[in-house]
Amino acid sequence: MLVPLLGLAIGLLLLTFSLFVYKGVPVVHRYAFLSKFENNVLFIWGNISISLAAMLGIAGYWNVFQGDDLRLGRIVLLIVGITATIWSMLETLGVDHPLKKFAVGEKINQIGVLNIIGYILSGAAVLTLISIFGIAFFDYNYGGDAFMYHIPFAARIWGIIPPEQYTFEYFTENRFLGFPLLANWLQGLFWVVFNRIEATNLVAYFSLIILIFYLVKVPKIPFYLASLSLLAVPMVHMHAARSYIDLPGNVGVSICILTLYLLYIDKIKLDFKTLLILFLSAFVAANIKLQLIPVVFLLILASLPLFVTNYWRSDKTRQDNLLKLAQVFALGTLASLIIFYNPLKNIIVYQNPAYPVKITIAGQVLNHTEESPNFMHENIRRLPPPVRWGRSLLEINAFDDRRPWRWTLAMDFISWNEERFGMGGYFGGYVIFNVVLLAFLCWKNWQKSTKVALAFMLVTSAVTMWLPQSYELRYYMYWMIVFVSLNAYLVTRLAEQDPRPKNVIKPQYFGLVAFMFMIIFIHKTNKFFTYPAFQPLTQQLETADWMVKKEIFSQIEDGDQVCIVEKAPFSFFYNSYFHPGRDYSVRAEFNLEDERMKDKCEGLKILR
Image (cartoon, rainbow, N blue to C red; front, side, top):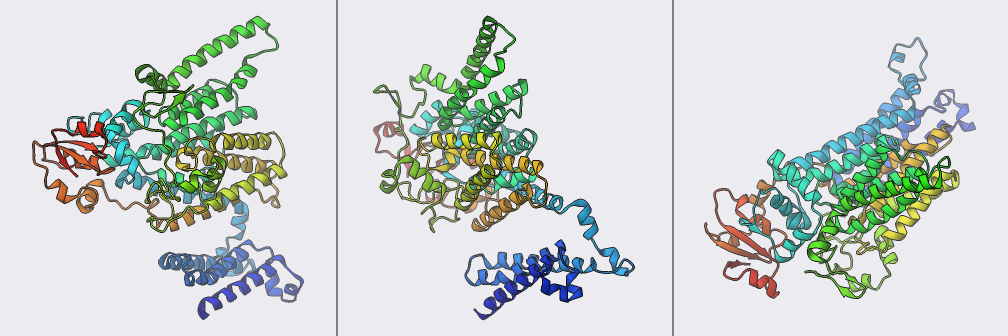
């Protein structure tokens, strides 16, 4: 304990001394040598780094960070600090001194400290995105939903694994018939193109890349801020390299909301390009995830005033304007029919737009095969939906030591009926930071862009908190994506309007904060969602007995027709596609207590 405390004391003393020198307090002026470091940026940053390296020893003593990671971090800080301090000393040398040629202060001043920070953050963003791509392309997937129906759906759509080879569970089959399948179609496409199941992860990855590209090109947010502000959100970071479909669907909703925002503040025009963005984003969202269809419908309603104001011209007669609006709304109706293809198809075929999920309209229960999702702990059920949602946002009582990492894709790894199941995922501290930042931006720059941003967030929050299972944040992560993107936009515009150094609202500073939150997330998840392990699914199936149990698989003979029971979400991997040279067919079921499932397995070799 003595050594960490000593390091803390030395670090604090050095930090205080350095600040006094940098600010040029009167006592410093007594020493000519020290006064040379007044307002020397390299000096203050170098000494801050050395101070942190000394003080972080106490964090290791209290086990705040893992030993190896902390040791590496302190070494890096020490090297950076010593290097910057030496460079700061070179700045004090005379022009004729032979070491003066190694001074970099003038070059830094020419480039600009903020620009240098931007370059460093851009490099960090690029490296992180490349690393996540490595996971998406090379590593096996993990997660219940992906194994249970996303990847099986992709295989069925593209004929990779036909129904004769593997038949879904009763409930899963009906989900295949009724759920939107665009993301699964794309997953199958990547599977076929690259001839590897791991490539199904690329759908989520490229959805993030498309979102970053949109933020850079349309609202013109710097690349580093667009990337790091999103990667600091655990749900976005985790889903970016996995075969879940939550991120692609929510990217569609987010782009739609942000485009409407830019239209309402008159930053973009309602031209063909903008209409195409609105249509494609709405189409993608509505045809990827069932829960997002009502949100897309509300967004279409929110766009109607924009069409009226854009196409109603004062220099035209009332009749001409009405005719023009009729044409616009006719095209809009056609576009809506395409966007809402899936629920319309379900109405025609199954008499239920949300088939196979149970819904009730005017007291009439529509055709269905499964109940509406309503599983939650009694303590959560008793809370009003807004309180439930807010508690999950702030991650109050959200974490459980039984999980392998602090955050997981679905905040699962515990029973679905436990109080912490599904809670959290946005990083409560990061949520609070963004709330404070938006409040400060509204106070600092109360104009149209901030007023509309605040209105958008209030309305978006009011809608989202009442949606089904809203406390399971992965379903509606568009809320956090829009939140950080609006803040990034407002910070960038304010920095352009007020470039003075004393203005603390800079995109580079926001990027640094986001980077720190991202580093904490990477550390708390033991780098699992950031650094590739280069472990394909084939390797995992060979070594993980919990995926395909040997005692069950050994009972399957070539030519068998078997029914695999109670092995979800890994039932899919019992089929012969994953066991080359074998020839048999598999049907999966969750259990045989339901008569509908029992009948499906009748006459088959039942293994459980």
